[in-house]
Length: 348
Image 1 (cartoon, helix red, strand yellow):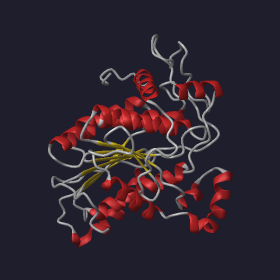
Image 2 (cartoon, rainbow, N blue to C red):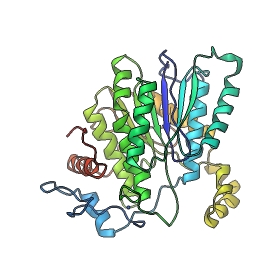
Image 3 (cartoon, rainbow, N blue to C red):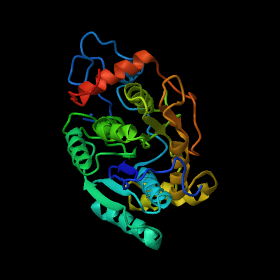
């Protein structure tokens, strides 16, 4: 049975029992700045490693580019939408693990999925909440180890954690929190869950990991989108037979904006009904993203790197549209990330 692992700031991870999921759905760092790259300080590149061009761009500007169109609230909705869609596709016959900080919110999602499963399921699946503040790399490592102990094979890993706001404090790791959530923790989760993904691949099952962030919005608009593109390519290069995808959820309608303490997000919530023609519900978003992920085959890819994909908000394959990177950038960002996350067992 396929395993779905979802990591979010305020929600959790999923896995399914021991029968393979069909390849198609049953129904159809101190401040807001990014870490300094290219210096000899704690987050700089090591001596002899050329600083990637996009990293120099970040260092010169001294702060993160504007965030993705999808807010933290919308990302939580996206994660819920994908979890519930997966539950429908497998008819509840899946092990679903939700990873995040908010157990109360997770239990509401779990209750909803159990109710949707109803009498149509054989009851072989399970739902679990794993508490974790994934902005801290040690937390990611510990949670991943616990999850792998319970579920040695992981078929689908979905990471949607995000944050939106002017204030972005530095984490205990010394990393800007926005950068930690939108890139570094995602890289860490991908790395730590490799044993589960490889086990699924070696068993002839689906093995796919997706970072839901901002595919197609790279360059000057959002440098961390570039990082996510390069991350997926780097993991795909090192892990043939596994799909690594960067996806964009687009504009998602969510009631979570009402709970925000931001006057800006409250204002967005007021005008959101007027934007209905150009937005989608969290359920629609989940279906779109799954359609793209199901179609992604490890033998293919969006560009030159086999197994690496870029997926748009309608599930479409983006190719290399608005892609900014090179093999040199990819190698440089990988080396930088290994150093920042203090990961000792990463492939060179």
